Length: 123
Image 1: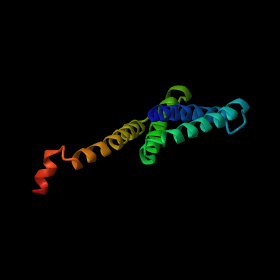
Image 2: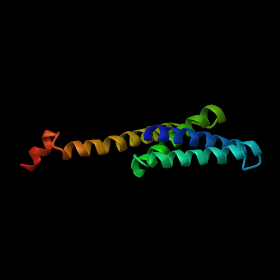
Image 3: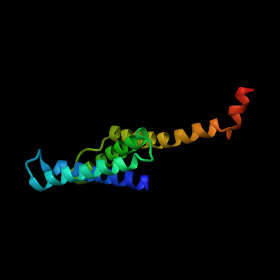
Image 4: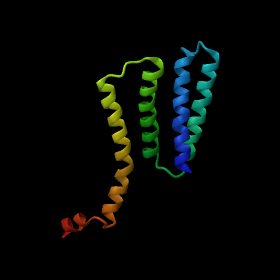
């Protein structure tokens, strides 16, 4: 369930950020209110996910995927530029999230002796 809460937090954060853009610096009432509401939902959902997921992992995934998604949303819906540099940056964010998630698994696997190379180095 924690991963569902984290997914909801990401979605709410993306919607909140889109609402922020549409609020035009708090000059538009409805998008301004939606921004506050969706950011509140995002933080509540993120908080629930932290009951199980370590904060370093949850926050990195939440902010990383949200940032990458907003770059894509900005390109498609707000006609922002999508340069090669931005595409590489999005790829690095995604790679970082994947490595962050697999890193602990690989460390635990090596520490538990599931990796034959870890025993060879000790002996």
